[in-house]
Length: 243
Image (cartoon, rainbow, N blue to C red; front, side, top):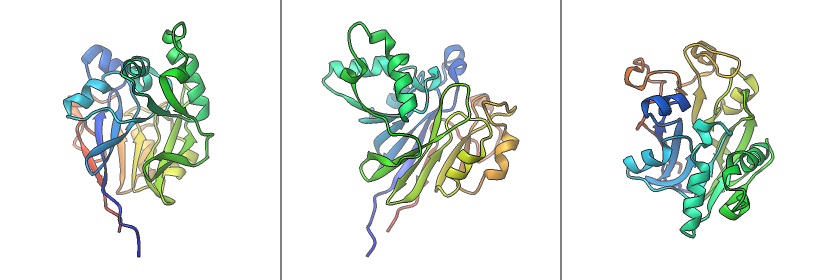
């Protein structure tokens, strides 16, 4: 008899880049993993994410995945860790080992005179291409992206079945895309005009299947083209229940 699993879903919190928040107040690209509508893991903590969580009625989960050290993916991390720690709560920060080192050294530097990063959070830093427990019965494997800052996408799996894939910020990079190919839900970074560091919409098109979506950071959230692939703030994606 196969194991019965609870439902997993994704809530998209934001799709903007750093400038989108600073100049227009939009939430940076981030999404929440839900289990039976309960938040169990947050993906990236850029500008505007903490307030957006509250707007949607969610609390900050114990486990956060950080893909890289750009402001629109990790900008709120130092303040959140300091506030939560002061309330006797240590969050689990999960990042590929090279990214974790950069976060500790650079992103957390504002606390360096008072606290070491290890005092403010529980850091989980697996080597790339190594599967490690994430939360509950989910595992995570980080895969290198192609970006101006050291960055890793990932595949989240359960009992060896790939469920959720995310490129994080990346140019068109076949090895990363191939790692996401069998995921039930795959989210790609793509923009109207591609570059070495961010894939173009036309570049990711050949890799898209029925379960693939796009975070189009450069698109105006109020005027996103009518395309079911392009994610919108507040959107919910359901992963079918396993039996």
